[in-house]
Image (cartoon, rainbow, N blue to C red; front, side):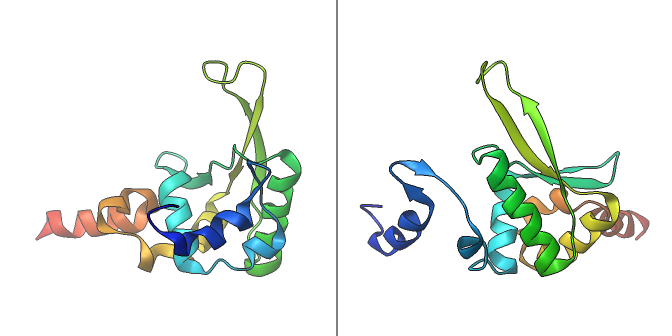
Length: 138
């Protein structure tokens, strides 16, 4: 960034020849705060299903597998890789995202919830629903 040269290091980690990529070395630099930022930016909570997903569609299938294995190795969380076609934006491309089951969603949210800004609490599901119900009872 021309405005924030201190961020150039991070840009150089992710971008090679103008293409964004991810590997285990980059993932190992993430802490819970970093995961919370990534999730609030590219994640979604499905209230009906009580699970979350992270849209990693800028990464290849193999890179999604790297992320998936990293979650398993580091946190014993096993998201699964979903494929989707976004015909409106990318008619000839398959995009991928990581989907978490209910149990792994709870584990993941426990890791990041303290770092979630109040304006984004809708992305942590039941924890937020419990708080809202408590306020309504008062």
